[in-house]
Length: 378
Image (cartoon, rainbow, N blue to C red; front, side, top):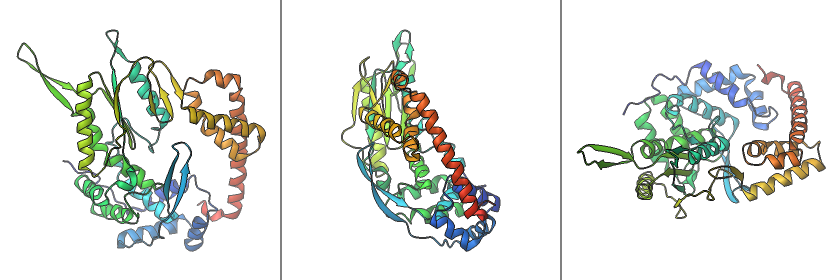
């Protein structure tokens, strides 16, 4: 196995400065930890020098992560979120930059927490696969859905470190990643920038094995041997796994391989997984959508949240919170079979109004932050 990332120098000052800028890009400069950092070190150049020195000496001065439990309305689950100090977040960005060569090997349809690979990207891909035909017949007749039980916290830290060591030839980078991983209470930490990439990377080899190296051998009458792939398409939305094919027996074989791969990694699939035949009236419930062969709709619970968001914004159209909540549903509505709802409720005009409210608020905040923290923008 060829190891990667050997030419990355995480102590390079330009790389560190770039990571600091990207880390701070969409964060409020009036955050207490950010203000404290700049009060202590002055500007980005000095902060970069401090991070460089700690990396070279291999002694990170980090504030312990603290945790809080939040209730996710969409999934109706309680999640333990790790809150990291801004300095550790900067180190997360440096580690991810160092892993960029390995990250480039992620599967095309490994989604979630990656730029331009969110819910809509995944839902449109599944819809496209379900509607594909060959010689007048649908390519996909069966689909399987799996969910990994408590994925982030159940990832064994020693196994993901061992997995990375087999693929990363960079002692300094590996030291940084190990140090950051060991600051997590258990497994990986939800909310960590590094964790979302490690979560995808840990399943990368499983994705490629299921999609590209799971097959059966077919002996033809003419004496030749043909390799037949067990499945047609694969999509991983972090811990939600989807496979699709045309033969039920092949799908079950692929499911067994997937279960075995998860056990090897110390992970556990929920018992609720199922493999089912998909007809014209059946759908795949994934990523907030109900995906049919000929159209896409939004989950009923999600649609209720959308209607509440519309009502709240109409009642308080100057509320920034209401405007941001409404805009967060814009993509779901525009990429689903919701055109009638959009037109009948005049939501295009409502979205335009919400964008103006958010834009005005953002400009005001920038002016305020420039006045209070002028030294941050260096």
